Length: 416
Image (cartoon, rainbow, N blue to C red; front, side, top):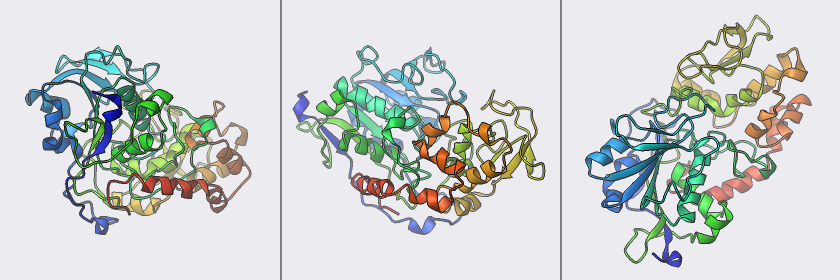
């Protein structure tokens, strides 16, 4: 396969349907079909090939895991790569996950979280084609998009074609937040995008390649183009299998929890606003049944909502465990959380908590993790200076508007 003949391709095999009327309405089961379910669009590229799959517990085809589905179809899967939380999705946030053998299938599983976050040439030496299928939540510091970048780079650098099975973005109906300053690049933020970027995993992949935000070698190999369908004359570097009947106004419930502490759609909606508390001494609700929907600390006024975080299956250790915390409960129905989010990051939670916290100097963690979450060191200064939410939001421009222009170039679905 000649390097200069390889293209990046997106399937454009069907018309779009408008579901804008679903926003803020009851959570009906609409007709969104994920890329993984559209097997007729990608199965031919896998037959007779040695396949590597980047997947986790969200990689489902209806009620059956993608790995099991492909094995039943006679596809030869030689390797599984797993992200943060592991292939089966049961590891704590940030926990080290060892390489292993999947007990159900006997296929080797290589962890792509921690020191080994990018497939090596040795990992891929027996692989003909790579496949990526992960449910994202559309938030910059949710690490699956970082894993996606490394996976794309590995595919390009090792001249392996890559299939990306797209899935809808549950936070895909708005764009908001500070754009990451590349001085604060980390695994929880690798690119100059806002906290909520309003793109599916497939659209984000196209932006990475189109804007040449990959490694120097991957950018050199990459030749960006869009066509309707690959042929023998136009082999591909990357092929995005689109969802069907999804738009950026679609509202839906995820069939599988994307990670142990995002176990319901309400937490996913609150996550862009309340994950800031991971950079503070406050509990963000880990160890409760409402992570990211309740937050607080033992030092806050006892007149506030109270809760006691304790170790559980998704959070074996975290802040304030077994201590009575006082703070806020923003939980509710999915519709109520949508209204509370109101298509923007809610800074008032962080601002109010800082104002009420008695020990201002100890509010933010000494490791400055808040700067990685915010993507800058300005937010902390603004909070300490008593800036209003409106003043802070104003400082996000013009970078936020500039990103929105970039984003538009790579959308595969009707925008909000």
